[in-house]
Length: 233
Ligand SMILES: Nc1ncnc2c1ncn2[C@@H]1O[C@H](COP(=O)(O)OP(=O)(O)OP(=O)(O)O)[C@@H](O)[C@H]1O
Ligand SMILES: [Mg+2]
Image 1 (cartoon, rainbow, N blue to C red):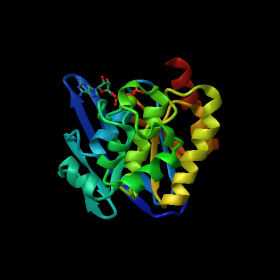
Image 2 (image 1 turned 90 degrees about the vertical axis):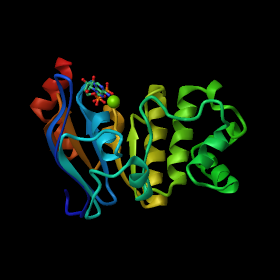
Image 3 (image 1 turned 180 degrees about the vertical axis):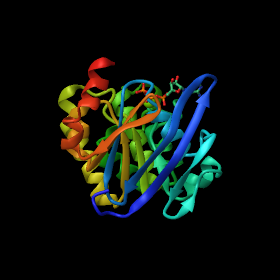
């Protein structure tokens, strides 16, 4: 964990859907103030892990401890109340509401919500109904909504999806700015290796619900099992 204290400890997490073991005995830690990447092929269990941390799924075994408190049996709104915010891979905005209204749902007043939209480059879309906006714009609005919760821990599920390759650098900048401006710890699921390698202090690699590898970006990039998992998928 590179010497920083663990903000989150995931211990022995398991969950099954019918015959599919989506997570099997998964353990890892998220260091306070760090950007931790959670990567792995499609279906590896990354989103399932976010759903367990945020209380949407109830694991069949294991615990999630956040700042010394066991979150495992808490309802999602109680977990959110501990200032754990997230974005969703497939977006969970209210489609018929404006961008501004969506951010206000995160708990911000109008002025603050406008500031947050500005922060993620979506000020011009404030009064627009979210439904008609491009996927990339909606992703940023969802990040603004998460920031409205003043999160200590921010979970980002594929922040770069919906953006072209040339936007990756800008998304990386945004994520790094969020970490320093909001003093938030970030756990990020992402398929863009370029983004993950650039912003993450530490990377956890999942495959078939199990931890395949863990380390800093250089170690992960050079890990034969990781290379094999990606080339084989
Ligand atoms: N609610 C659910 N009901 C049934 N199966 C589920 C459910 N949620 C997840 N799964 C299964 O669990 C496994 C892990 O899915 P998950 O969505 O966590 O993968 P992922 O790593 O996020 O993949 P991707 O990169 O494609 O988003 C898959 O086999 C998926 O079909
Ligand atoms: Mg996913």
